[in-house]
Image (cartoon, rainbow, N blue to C red):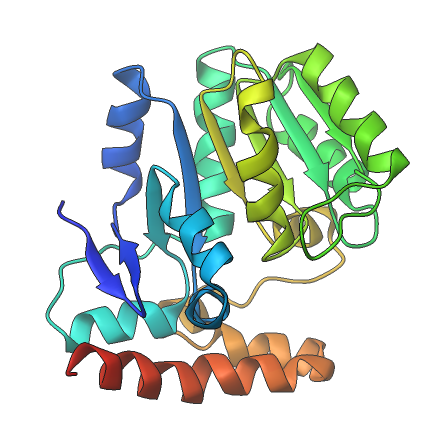
Length: 243
């Protein structure tokens, strides 16, 4: 599927079937789960825009991005970070691949790992909290030590949950240090869902694109981010596309 650009960033919009085909063909994939927040950041931050544009794939995560693509008649598939991560876990389990978890806002990697191993017994998994990462992607001593342990473990699938833009900058800087890596993705708050700290929206709300309302009910402090994603982003993206 040919890439389309939204706010200067190429968007691929592939579904899991196409991604799995690439993995089976031996392609090594860094996937960015593109959403309005990420694209708004890239719009004003040239370095970040260049970083995420260098990934192999930029998928359609946020409903706002999917809606803009639909209005512009660009054929895309919506695949959220949580759904992609779950597909990758199942793929790893079936194909006996090692999985690494890194990050989590409040150390949820350990809790997420427990739930994952309940669902996928025998999966070879290493979870690292990751320490502190700056907005530029730099590590503190704890984060550096976590990365070194993960390098020794040598995951083939790596899920990084530092939040944007830190996770993408970290992946850009360090992905080539993992010799056996086949797929890496920044997964934002996915560990929060797996660890049970945040509940996912009901399926019907996810289907009609109302996850933002569900998140707002649970985390009112996100109102500024949600306003930018739900209102500001579609206006800017559509205006940019017609210039």
